[in-house]
Image (tube, rainbow, N blue to C red; front, side, top):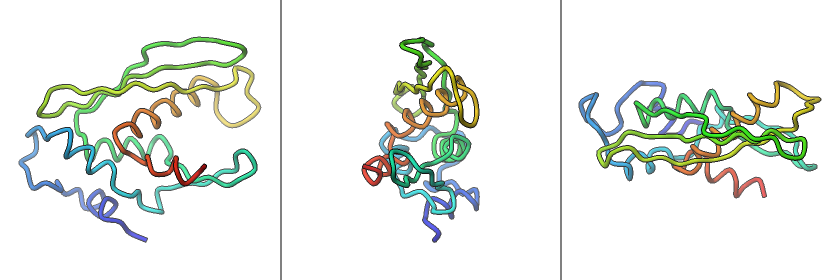
Length: 145
């Protein structure tokens, strides 16, 4: 199944027809990031006894690169509470209104028995959650309830 967002990403088109380098409105960026994610970019995993769909962090980066060029993020805090690593990031998007940012947290058990490590897993979760605050894959949170 191919979506408009996927097709535009693959073609490398500027969906607004603007000259590269011109800043877009945050409303337009959020509208584009809120488009359905192509099925081929979604992954599935078992969590809490059910299968959920999610967008991997590296695919989230590709969507951000395409729809919000010039975006960046920074780690704002790293905390350790009750055996969990909690990481807070700020995702900033440069737009015609200025720089707009959203912050989100990610957490992971410090003693990890699964893939990755606690810091990279928490960072991935925080990045995807912050991107969802701009609309990227936000609908997946409703589907996975």
